[in-house]
Image (cartoon, rainbow, N blue to C red; front, side, top):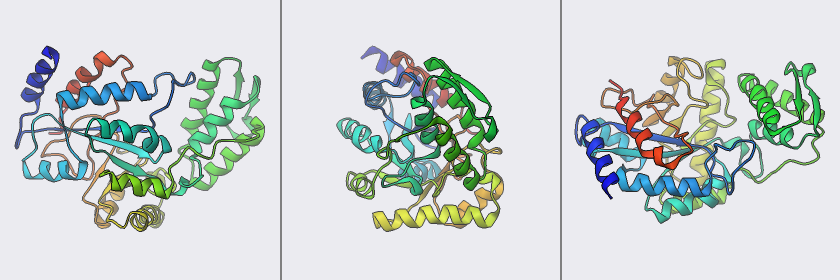
Length: 322
């Protein structure tokens, strides 16, 4: 109780209600049923529940569209926070949604549409292929990805991070070809086909009062595409989601999301052109009235110790967009 009062006091000083308010937008991807030994820092059902409990006690959590409109108008409450998820993982529906509902919280889900209904994102293909590869040396030099010893979990995590840091910046078709070649070399027998949401789950999110946002179709790095390809990717994702939900898609998240690296001013202009109300990046910090609504910062809480969760958010809240 004392800590919550202290956190609110500090938050009110950093982000008072009204024209000087700041908006923190939290960025998640998956919520796992249990700890992944390959990636022990990933959010699990227990840690997410604990985070949402503390978030609801210390902050004012708003739906993103409402928060963006109130940010523009200068009517945000003190300590305003939004919750977002990227990509469209099934555990967002099966695990995260019940927790959000239990704490009375709303969230926005940015979905890459090409991988729904039994598909699999390229990064998960890499992760699962290397996770299940036989111990020993995995030679990916023919794909330009080097050689990797897979003796320990740390070896596998290191190999995954190395491969992903390279392939995610490749053109989409080449990325798929390289990832397919990796699967052959890793001798994958079967990979999961239930990682992403279905259309029915997206509809259920809407019925539960959650908001759906666009995240392109195939999750490309937009900075590497020409204007025609960028428009095709953005519009394909937007139209698909509008057909599934029967609702206008008003919010967009840039894939990967680093400004100046993953997207450029010309892609921001295209997002504006398509009539979105706002767009989010993965640049740390909190938004203010001075922030570009089409490049809103987001913050991913990485602390594994739950006692640092709110202090970490308060620290991010101080990093306002002036």
